[in-house]
Image (cartoon, rainbow, N blue to C red):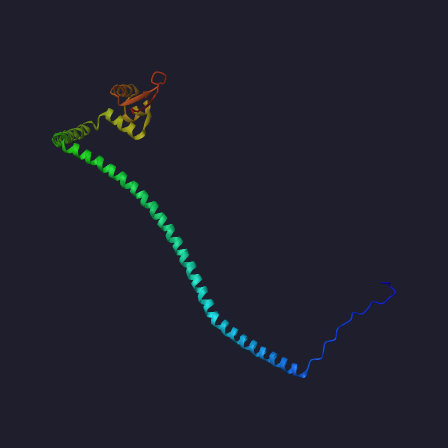
Length: 209
């Protein structure tokens, strides 16, 4: 086709004119379809109204199911914990049964030694009496030695922990030579300890530990 030539107009087939009878029939069909569509819309609205509460019920059931699932999960966790505790308790029971068995053996041995226990009990009672007697004698001796200088020195060392020899002499009210003599006697008895006696003219003195 040349650019100077105008485009051809497509040929359109002309429809035959609709007859008046056909037009009335068509309008009647359209009217019937519209009524049917209106009925369907009404039915749809009615169904939607019926479905709405059902949907709410379904949602409620789903929420309840989710809640029950959560509870079931929680119960399963608790059951798992209980099983774990049960296993621990079984181990503890085994341990207690073992200890009980050992105690029963000990009881059997002890029952076989009732006579020895009776003898031991008698010895303990005798020792308690003897200890009580010695305790009374010790109290009497303590009263006798309360004014004894060496006893006073031991009491001072108990109170102060460590003292110089000159301090001991001063507290006892005697010359250092006398105090040294008493301290050496106490040292030989294993009651006190004189530190650096040979190198220090006024050595440190403490109770023997």
